[in-house]
Length: 86
Image (cartoon, rainbow, N blue to C red; front, side, top):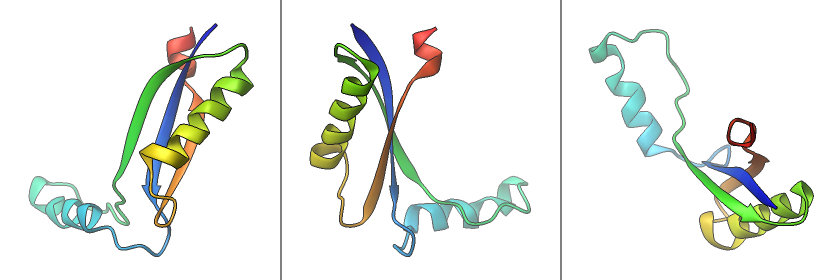
């Protein structure tokens, strides 16, 4: 069975985020005020062939740990892509 999953990778709390800081500094010039604490990250969407949703998530988590993120400075969270499943 095919399962669509999403993996979000973000910098851990306390790790400097220069991309997020650059975006935050640019926002007032674009007319966006009141936006604070901008953090950038990565989103991966892919399909996993597995017998169950739990197996698909386990595969996505392992993939995130071993390839998609640096576990020293980044957190990775996997979830089923509910939109793609409907």
